[in-house]
Image (cartoon, rainbow, N blue to C red; front, side, top):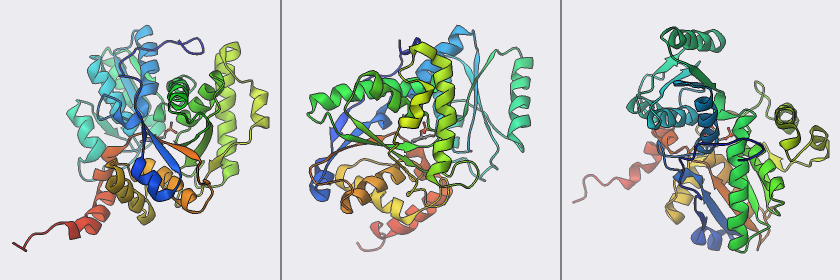
Length: 346
Ligand SMILES: Cc1ncc(COP(=O)(O)O)c(C=O)c1O
């Protein structure tokens, strides 16, 4: 029970908090990794913690089907499909992206888990048409918002913050800085609320990986979006919540928009470099869309001295592995990794 709401427990928690010894020695700062990529359904990722709460709400409402939306390669859609499969519910994903011409990465996993994906021309009308179709067939539809980021969706990461605070204290790093990805904001705002709920000394740095409100990549743009979301959360939970709306003005958010590289889910050489770096140092695979950009922040800020020698950093691994198999990333990875293939030497 958190802020007055319950969940259906299907995750094997806590996820590990690991010290990255090789990376730490190399960078000269202590880097830890919170392995939320290892959450246990549908190849894992951060959205599962949110979905424990959505599933409870859906079951309470007697839902037989989950419908959600996102980009064609939505990790959140794939994990919604995973939860639906596990709990005997129907699921559908709606996307306004074009069919990419191949069933790869998340799309492949969606299909494997029996979840149809609707490529619609317009999200508003397309989403409604899909909901109407299934409702007409007798399903009781529960709509999960994009990224699982609404008022309820922050609960998973509020809980994660409390879990992480306990682990960090046990490991002797109670004042570490968490580096987490900012996408649709639910993870970041959830962590912010959870840290407050347990009076944690952990610090939080958010790395924004996509332009907000059209093409804006400025911090101001992100903060205004965050302000609206925060206000809705405060209204929703009322006295159960740890913050009041007015608190927003006193926050000094530690967030960065420096690692967006101009667009969402674009192929970026610097991001692939840190993906190789982490894979080669720690055998941990990160993705090109979310965690790669956030880990780039960790590496680059350690190298530039923004993270000081002796400081402790917790890199939040939020999953996203299937992203490496999407075509525009895969072609770049294959090109760069071709030298590792020895085809005619022996
Ligand atoms: C792998 C991965 N990491 C991080 C995020 C960002 O989380 P949030 O949308 O809660 O900000 C997402 C969102 O889709 C994701 O798929």
